[in-house]
Image (cartoon, rainbow over all chains, first blue to last red; front, side, top):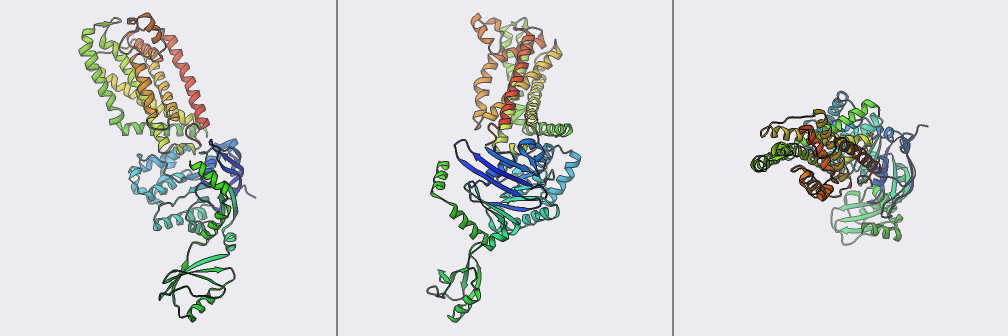
Length: 320
Length: 257
């Protein structure tokens, strides 16, 4: 079997103030995967990825990228790795083309090789027209695309995207999704994604790990995870206002507004039964949608289960 | 990285640094030219003509090497300090850290960038001085060697300052409270032979005195201190500070959590 694109064993990070950000996590991301690493703010996602790309020094543990141990030959491992960080991390005063060309230079790419690559990437990401402008003149979405172009200059086999679509409008977000899908499908680039848009993870990723309080609480496929979902909540918009939520035996209905009901459906229950009962009571449903993304419901329940009073206390100390 | 890739990476960083200070030339190249022109007019021409000879040379000829060296020192230092700290502040230092570029290349790239500005400004100030006096260089190779070494030394100093700095104020403290006094008291405007014995002894503790004197020796052929000893001291400082800066970089001081 091929070496995993990323293999993490017993990774621990204790910061100078004593805070244990990572508590010995194990994680494998297989080659060619589109992998989601999810977790609430401060759970340890960015610390994990920071260790992988050398921005954070680990306390203990082992990290290998395509079988290359970062403690033995980090430089070789770094050639396999492209990073799109959460926050803008380029000089705002430099020209767009200079930023991507400099990155290629840091990897030792010749200008004759780097320039066509830069042109291709900036064109694909809709930035070629902006190449001679200063980076600070770009919109937020353009800056995110610039960081993607920069990360791809040296043709990495593993791309880490830390919240790549944060603050990006829906249309642009979808075009970025399509670009990432193509990258994963056509070029075989392994992608690790962290995001707060769980719809994004559900739509793009095949496998998922959920990290909370510095520990991996789930590491599975998205399909398996969703299969475990016990309850889905739907919002029903009604044609005519009702005074209170109708009672249907075996189902939980709650009135949100006079013309809106929340319906909790457990595994094995059928929506047809509800619609039939509502129809018999003269209530007409004109539209229906999920209250939250399915993965989001699962994620929230897992994170809430994992929250202990001790963890909350330690989080407060760190904030202080 | 193989040797070619390493050279490409180093060249990329040096060019980037040169582009940075030339892009903001009204902040980096113009002010020292104007300031030094003022020094030449006021101290060299107006006051200098009343001071008379210093170590057997006109006051203008005496202060020109010192003022060139002062420009080289302050510009080499502040270029690296502000550039590297800006990279930290804007987090663009991460571009370098995630790349396979070795730390010694990162350090050397910034040093060479600082030297490019320091020596560039030194050249501009030299050209400006030609409007006020005729320069003759007694020992050209020695002059070049000492100015290059001094520029390298203060570029490394600026790098260490930037690594340790947490806010912009931290990169102006050393130039304001350490470099400027040491430079003014380093024999730029006077010969230490004018001082009482005690203050001559104190002055000998000032490393900038050695650099200014060796540089002046290169131009005029006179020095207050032994040239060979001074060059050895500068070289030793470079080796020590480069090692310290590289060690700090390897440890991720100020840039890795």
